[in-house]
Length: 436
Image 1: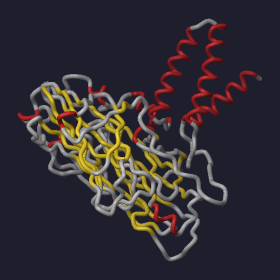
Image 2: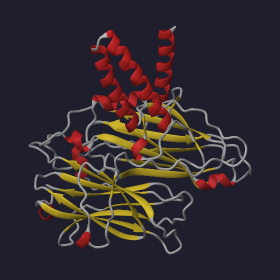
Image 3: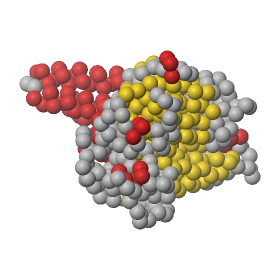
């Protein structure tokens, strides 16, 4: 009987780890608050300055937490002359319901100490109809421009724009610094050509439950297939998909019928989808109105992941230039609450097509995996099992402990299993699982 109970408990834990949505329909009455964006584990506090004179240092491999009102914040980078590329992303996190306009957003620029912007360094993103987490990234390419190739000090300038009638209060800001190694001999120096574009051939198989995350840090891993979730007005669900060199992604999102309180009305931007690349730069996006009955968005297939795409003049091709995790943010417009039961989640269906055989990566001077620009066996496992990054890290620790157990004697192994079981249960209780 002990073995049976252990097996059942392990299976239950496996279902939770796989991200199977747990029914969490609200009782009649006021809806529960939507879950907030989950900050990165181990993020460091930093305070950007309006002047370069006192700009704090930020370094590759780290994530930082700050706040920002309308205007500029500056941060200092110290970079090497090794042909490497530095990416600084900024995630703006407005409070739910904050007033924004279509011109509001965030911009990231990389500059020299002389105040010169590095070429093609500036990334910008603007809001649509809702105040949702928004990301942009700036880049210093260490091999393409003489002014930005030398070693030394550079500055990342993050600018938040807000119209006069928009929310002016300080908002949380997440910064992430990533380093891509310099290219080795034989790496591309020009953009590829001739890739066909168009709508993907999305799968129509039965949907499998996967509950999305609150942002980049807990996005739910997905692979090719059909996936089911649920959303409420004003909510953004986040997912991540591993794309290796040579692979393409096509995706579609559908909102099914809601419990309506009014007829003959709809919300502009009721369903929106944004695709981000591994350094958190927007790739493409689209939104449509939703009338409480049905809405669907399909994004064109990305070009194959290719190092040379960064040299393209097409703004939706340039970002698809590194392998790694690509992120999908799906938003249900807050205005949908005006004519539906806000407390009752609406079914969301995601259809993903991943095509192309993984190809050998370009020549690098170093391993790009350290910067997040590669797809490994663990990433493919996370996508197959539907793990968030924190869950994947926990699973890796569990596998490591199990190897220790396997190598231990019977008595020591039993004790380690008991400790491991308690640790897993405690971790699950602390993190919690919800589909709200």
